[in-house]
Amino acid sequence: MNQTTGRHPVRRGGALLMGSVLLAVLAACGSSTASSKTVTITLSGWTSSPVEAQLMQKELAGFTKSHPSIHVKYRPIAGNYEAVLKTRFVAGDAPDVIYVNNGGESSTFMKNGDIISLNPYIKASGFQLSQFYPSALALFQSGGKTYAIPKDQSPLALFYNKTLFRQAGISAPPTTWTQFQHDAQLLTRTAKHQYGLINSVQEPRWAEFLYQAGGGVMNSGQTRFTLTSAASLRGYQFFVNLYRKGYAAVPTSVGATWGGQAFGMGHAGMVLSGNWLVPFLNQTYPHTSYGIAPLPAGPKNNVSLTFPVGYGITKDSPHPQAAWTLIQYLTSVSGMTKWMNLGLALPTRPALLSLPYYHAHPVLQGLLQQLPHSLAWTFPPGFVEYSSTTMTDQTTLAIEGRESAAQALANMQKAGQAILQSNS
Image (cartoon, rainbow, N blue to C red; front, side, top):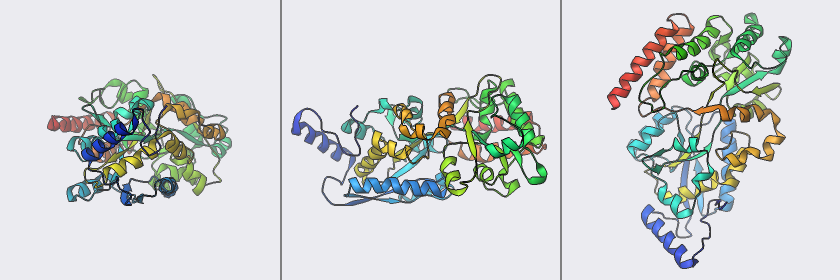
């Protein structure tokens, strides 16, 4: 394993070959890091909570210590991440390095050339793409080019409140849909604003039920929506019924902004969330006694969604070589190990699943067990607004009983197909 930690590795073939490689990269990529002059680059991403921002600052402090000639400014974007980036791309003042969200605008960014191909840097530095999960890496590749390196991922798993489970007489987390609905009913105490499940109705919180029933959102080639299949309807109806029966609620109904907060506040017996919830609970609600388990299985499987995130370099970066040095550091074995040891997410390198950190934190085993049974969440170009508005609005109508589950899916499918047709 010949991984770098942010610097080019020493190669066989002598100094002459090494010098030629470096000169070629610098010439091709317009780098300004050949001299000892300090350069400043900016890293932007979103944050699932203030805890994530604190952990990233800690990670970047390690980079600055080992790379004193590169100063990194961390500028997280608080809201409307992709929309803000779009405006900055138009204005020509985008950050040097950005989080690339597989399910958001990443496909559009790649198509439009907003983020650059990393192929020259990967080749010159000997960076080994084979050491990453192919499924995570493929989300950031197009036309034989790699546009981002996956930094982490997390599948959705079942977080359950051990105290509320014990009070309801439930001895273990549910493993089937039948048990899931039964437990949600037992956990619901509407007079106390307590519900079996609290989650938003955004598509990533219900799509897994479609897959578990043998259906899905789109076909594998993402050329056709499959929302109206009998299997998809079965999974969607199960999700909708949890809310209609009063066993599930949206976060705002209990004064929370997201499911994880509602869970920490003690209003939810269960929540579907990812690894990002762990540090949030540990720091914000340290007295919450919780466990994590794989999702309950539907008629076909217990598939979940996973959310790989990558680091990409924008077309506006005046220091792409310095930006690549940062990406190498953050996604190298040692860099990713440091990030994993902060407890925020799971690795995109399979070799790191056996880290001592996971043995020392057994609560994470439910997430690790879910990872092999997960599909990466993604959409083709042009679907960010559709997924955040049309799909959410239709599901809101369905859970409130103002529209049937079948009609909601039909409306989503019609709108989705129209976007596919307009993009073809």
